[in-house]
Amino acid sequence: MTPSGEELRARLREILGADAVLTAAADCAPYLTDHRQLYHGAALAVLRPRTVAQVSQVLACCNAARVGVVPHGGNTSYCGGATPDESGRQLVLSLQRLNRIRSLDAANYSLVAEAGCILGQLHAAAGQAERCLPLTLGSQGSCQIGGNLSTNAGGTSVLRYGMARDLVLGLEVVLPDGRVLDALSALRKDNTGYDVKSLFLGAEGTLGVITAATLKLFPMARDVATAFTAVTDVRAAVTLLARLREATSDRVSSFELIPRIAVELTTRHIPQVTDPLDRAHDWYVLCEVSSSHPADGMEELLGNALSAALGDDLVRDAAVARNERERAALWKLRESIPEAQRKDGASLKHDIAVPVAALPDFLARASAWVSANAPQGRLVAYGHLGDGNLHFNLNAAPGVDAQRFLADAPRVGRAIHDLVCEFGGSFSAEHGIGRLKVGELEHYANAVELQLMRAVKTAFDPHGIMNPGKVLRA
Ligand code: MLT
Ligand code: ZN
Image (cartoon, rainbow, N blue to C red; front, side, top):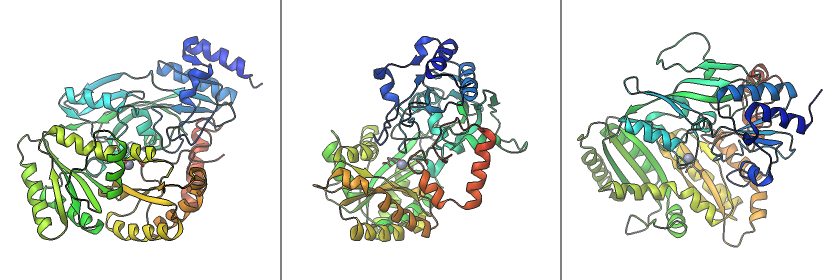
């Protein structure tokens, strides 16, 4: 017999202790709305386990009761991936108390961290051991590693180090029936059958709950050069990237495309952000090259490459950071773009990827579509040019009604995503599917792939309790 909400809460209090089962509206509220305020859910309770054994008991209990569980990290999802539905029948499972760094092995260049560790906390721990965890996100002060891995997060150093998935050596996962998959290996080589753990990376908590991970570390960057560069156009930026890769023995760690409007929005809405250059330009790139050798001449390499590009009319101007303070200011501009967009009003986000060399043509076609068909939006297209990943976002133009603007999201999204498809791209490059893009996945996914995804879901979670309604619809 299905237990009532009160019976279930009583059982969960026995497992976790009363203080770890939140039910008061004010306590639960922060867990029920997503970062972009797109979804406002309800829940039977918010659970805050302290141990893997407790997570295991909670899932076994919910599986038996057929109650949906929504894993919740730092709540920085752009797609509503960590927000429960409106039924009030689901439970939110916060991982924030599982926040220990279990070990760090400098010689093996690895660390084992629990899911609730804040990404910035892991950067600091790696740094203390003279190592670097390269996953770099604007939200690193609050996002949690469990969420980063569950969404296979990207960020600004993918070009050099790969996505979150590429940084994982091992995982510990609690399965929906409560079994614990201990695959916390620190091995670099392990070809023993199917790579089961990899299925949880990017699954957005729909197959099980990641409770810990063994992550790869790298040598610390000790010689870093950063430049905010005005480029002639986006095609010039693509050429500049190829040249920089060659000139630096492939040590470009970031190559971010920034349009003029993003400089205007950040300087207007974010205190202390200023335009690094004297004159306005249409397009910029924030590029960074780095070496673990303390005196590898990175600034000279970057300077020479930029001078040559200036001579060849690829580059119009550049500001090279002379110290850490200036470097931080350049990154502040880049990382504040999403916040500046938010402060400016309603926005439609498209997290797309196409092959890097196709970006200029994609951008030209997609921008023309927006001008002709969505003039109520102002294009704010920026992002990780080095990965072919653009945040092709639109902000409501001044005077446009926010609700009407947002209501047009499906039509605009479909047109942009159709074009992405024509270019052989992805409509979900680094933010995941969550709840927002379930329909797009059904529409664009290859039929065989979708069948396999459904088969995996059924095999891992036969009662459909894990993050219901996210990634795949029942
Ligand atoms: C970024 O690169 O700043 C983000 O992934 C955010 C966004 O889509 O706005
Ligand atoms: Zn991004």
